[in-house]
Length: 564
Image (cartoon, rainbow, N blue to C red; front, side, top):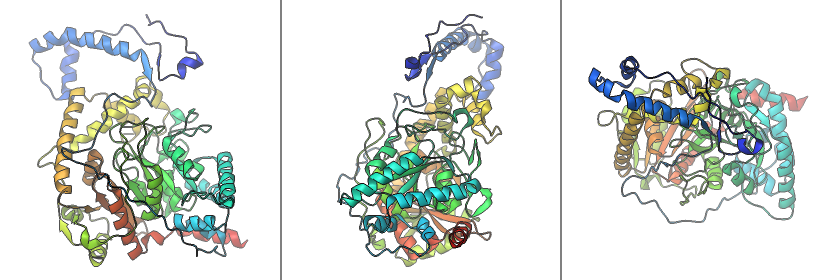
């Protein structure tokens, strides 16, 4: 068989974003029989004359495809098209206020230092700023807990100990000289292993990439370093950002070790809830912050699309991927978000816009909507009614509203966009059968999703994006009527719609089911208005105790260890 002439794959060439490989020059000719069979996959019905007429063009296209396939693109190469979630006429707020993170001075060290593992960011910041504990001591405490518990949780892929100890020592030295950077200074955290960190493996949770090292660091990690945070772990991701199964096992729910943590930011949510990190970074394309935060009883913020840079982050879907914090409270999410949001020239979807969070909220001044029909359909979350009553008690006047739905738009078909983009992002894995190495191979696994995406026509992908544009306009009409939408976390429709339109959501615990599993409630905000939903979530958490509950196994075991 003939082959295209290839360039030498020197180290310099393989380091570039595009390089040439060996691929077959000749392929079997497309016939009329092929077209008659294939048209069933695209819901078309061409007659014999039409098929005969297009035969030559289709064979010419195959040659073009083969020529394109002679080149391979790395995952980080961006498409020329950039998704913009702005509706027609939408003008983002441009008024900035100066954020003040008031760090208390009265936080004391507990008798059992293991309890510090569950302190929120402001409490940890108080201890560090007032030099009641050093960043080095706190870092060692969290790393020790990872070593003690992660054989059970499977929430961490790599402990970045050398980097962590250097960053902690630097934080201690700066703080001792009075150079305090802010509330994240000296606080250990974990980052989902989709984000590159130079000097460490970036595995994407997949056996296909388990030895991958990248010679750059994600923008979010760099921003957290500027804030003084200490990176101690790269947390697990379901393989290529799907589910909670990675090449080393299944990440567990700290509340029920027989249950997975849900995906794909499984490790970030599990490690945060179990007190293995001070906070964590996750990513979401279609529920990967919301779902594990709910399962593990954490608080998660999925920011507006384009608020946080994805530079240095594995691409699954260019128009849907988002990066956000998973923490122990909504206010912790606000502190972390303040450090990581903003323009990045390396990610053309990003913008710099105000984040005017002050932690205070007047419920009577906020127009609340709630998805009455979705709440009625959710028979699983037994805490929804109590959450709605608590919000009303806090002063929320909630009016029933409805999401744009399939009566006006074919909303459910929009998931084609995610599948098509993912198929392009991982073209190599499918084309060269590299996905055979992945652990999960069933119907719900990433390899199958990538394979079936090859049969989504480009025309249908573009049509879906046209309907998506209409959905954005319809969603804006709804958000002109309200400031915050209260929604049940369960139910794919709300998740699909808000991910497709790019709207921010905060998910926080709202109780437990009859078997002791955490449940949650969701607050949906206007585009670029993370501040309001975080303030509402903070007020809700201050009026309840759900965010103060921690998985007993990781508390009791710590106490037993400390007493030995």
